[in-house]
Amino acid sequence: MSETTVLHVGGAAPYDVVVGRGLADQLPRILGKEVQRVALLFAGDLNELAQPVLDALVAHYDVMALGLPDGERAKNASVANDCWEALGEAGFTRSDAVVTFGGGATTDLGGFVAASWLRGVRVVHVPTTVLAMVDAAVGGKTGINTGAGKNLVGAFHEPAGVLCDLDLLDTLPAEELRAGLGEVIKCGFIADPAILDLVEADPQGAQDPTSPVLAELVTRAIRVKVDVVVDDLKETGGKDGHPGREVLNYGHTLAHAIERASDYTVRHGEAVALGCVYVAELARSAGILAEDVAARHATAFGCVGLPTALDAGEWEELHATMKVDKKARGSQLRFVVLDGLASPRILAGPSEDLLRSAYDVIRAGGAG
Image 1 (spheres, rainbow, N blue to C red):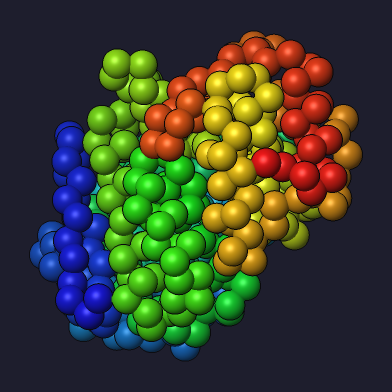
Image 2 (cartoon, helix red, strand yellow; image 1 turned 180 degrees about the vertical axis):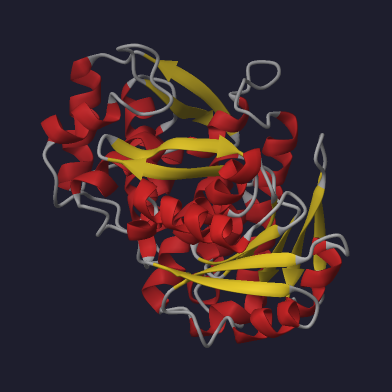
């Protein structure tokens, strides 16, 4: 797919998600003429890759570039405070804007800084990874981590626009691209089974940054998220029994616990793959999901090299972390599960025995 695709996100604060190649020149159009100063928040190792974005901005605005720590190390209150101090020293006002350039952690942190500075300034995301394109950059969720868990502090703050420049994936390490497919394949199970067909038919094309297969997968996954977000911006619930925005957290309850237990050395998409295989087994064991659909989880994630069996982490630690998951209600754990392809629902308060037995299956590598 060489053409540019524009996905419109409706709602109270509408914006466009643009998917294509060579998109940096579109930044001034999205930011608008009213903006005078722009803070470019970028992952620290992306200086050279960010140059086209910086060039597009300095031609129109007074630009302050702020390098951030790499990965999840950027997502804490100390880094956010450093950004606030820099914005204050530069005299940023509500008519100024933030542009993020980086992966999901950069987008989460930069979006939170924009949401919290003067109670909200304009932000445009330029995600540089598959994960950020299909997940963090779209939907307006921002956040930072605390010692208790991931994304426990944050705000809803819709961007003014998102530029998913597929050229940026050409230099993405193969393992990072593969990890991003964890979120893409998740979208196949919860809403768009054509994603699963594409991945299973051409797993190599799915991992090739120049492939039309990957371009279609990214676009389809973004469309899934856009459709869900438009109906349920602030995760208050969907219609006719659909979990609403909560469905996007399919597999994430265990995934976030795995990330924390590994001190974030397990990539998010890898953890999501494990979490999805886990909840598929949980639903199968509870008599909700058919055997073949549960088994397909390990097949779909595994065909692109994502993990489908745990080889680290202890149940007691993971279970304790799951209890402070954002979806929990009091002491009751709640999971997004499937009762069929693209048919999600909530499973509330499964028994301790059921939770543990599903864990034992994926720990042994026998899911499905």
